[in-house]
Amino acid sequence: MSQSILKDDFYEKIKPRLHRRIGRELRLAGHILDLGCGACGLVQYLAQTYRQKVIGVDISSGSFPRRRHTFDGRRFRCIRKDARQLGFIKDASLDAVVSVWALHEMEHPGAILVEARRILRPGGEVLIVDFPRDSLAQKLWDEKYYRPEEIKMLLKDAGFKDARARLIEKEQIIWAHGQQSAATRGLPYHG
Image (cartoon, rainbow, N blue to C red):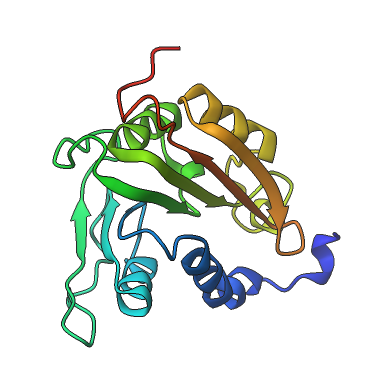
């Protein structure tokens, strides 16, 4: 799709729709980690809408919200932490890991995905939502973005099964996911 017909506020306008789509995808997950959570918007949305236990991790805490609970009193956590060092989370203890518009910012995405795999329970899911190369984001911010097949390979290299990646939202967003194998039970991948 031609980027010239997309307005510069395209990503801001689709954010609520993406949150709803992510929520539907992860609706059965009880305990979720959001990697590169930024201002914790998705963390708050999932905790409020789906009553999930959600932890947000970001290397910068500058935009974390002051309020750390939803309107109904359910608490969520936003933690300043390097996504490669999630030792505070036990092996095989989470149902899902999500990362929205952040994987391209991470210095060691392969190591981060291996760590994400460690903390996922057998059958748990990782969901990556990011900007693709040659997208409107590229025009707006000129950062290094991945192609869908590159994210799929990162997931496979980290040991995720059923790794898939495709373009959505007028081909301006990568929607990729993989699954923790039931056989590995959260152990580090050495393939």
